[in-house]
Image 1 (cartoon, rainbow, N blue to C red):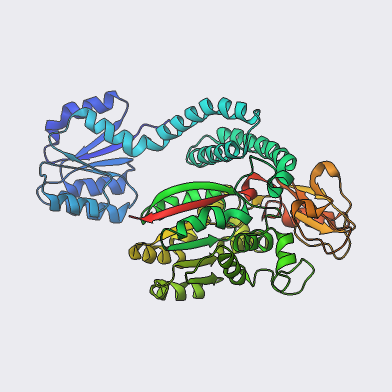
Image 2 (cartoon, rainbow, N blue to C red):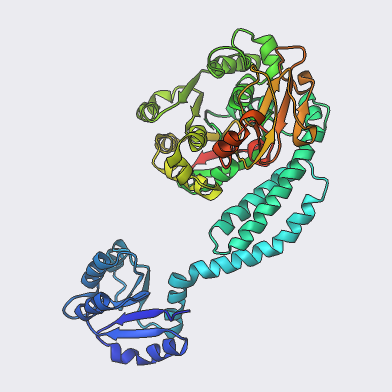
Length: 516
């Protein structure tokens, strides 16, 4: 490994000889200069990893040198050293993007710490993260072999997402691969867990039934509404890891009151899961009770056009007597318009905002080559989500809601999974097109590859034909037709899909926020 090269500029550089010898003995290569002009000349001639710069020098001052230096090399770390503790000097230096600030007299260990902080942080954090995950690896593996309940599965998933985000910052790609293998094992076990228990959960026969889409509003949202006004923000297709990625931005505005996970119903698709949230019913019940606004797969028209009607009827059933607003944001223009008019919503006790960007992003990865490049893997997908959110009208809306002093709940209807393995399925022309679940009367498939629901009524799913059945893809599989198999594999492999049974699709965030 090449030596770290330091440029130290001070008009009294001779007095710092002991410090320089100390650094050289530690293996650093130190070049010195006694004025700003000489330092700038050296920077034009040589490459340095970090600069120590005296603030108070005759001729070109430290601050003046700093400005010119940053014009030449904006990303070069600079540590300002000064005798003065004047606040304005500190502010000027910090405003010019210094990396650190030391007050004279400095001792050698301070210098060494500053070097490590600015140059070795990534390596040290990476090593610590890798070491910590290695310790956790065995514990997570043992937990995967236990008979976990719904809460324990949620806690384990949170832990795995934590390590995924931490290891993402490290340089140890081997550890990332090990974690991915552990996630794969977790998804396999979770598939069996849901398969064994789902019918009992939705029928209410299990004592371990989790909060799911159809009872989310009644059990977790309505109690808050009885206490205070709420903004309910439903970000379509927001995974838990995506929430954790945008959390630092949200935390600038709100305190996190609670961070929970609930279970999406199957199919983990908008037309089923989101309608279940707003209606407080399972899909088969919606079809029976509200045939005027429920639409089956084969019906013409949009399947999520009546969410406000479902919500209105659920609120009436719950005995709510307050006013509510419902706003669905489908594009940038609508988002900006709502941000500008958000003050008009202050008179409503409940404001529902359905925001559709993340779902569009996942579909765009399938359909657009540019997005495929930008969101090539899980990490890139998260990064793209953060970039969008930071500059989105939704972030602006949250800023204005925080200024109102209103409570906010952020949640979603389902997540998505990066699909990798094609599974052959045969259906007739009336079979739906979703890659993660199929409904039809003439489906041919390998039973070991799917979660089979031959009697939809047991899963509280509507069936348009007496012989209709549902099948759900597991883990990272996706359905492909044999007669066009190679096309499906090439086009859909490594895209984000939803509708099936995976940790990423089923376990989704529910976040309560209070203004700071």
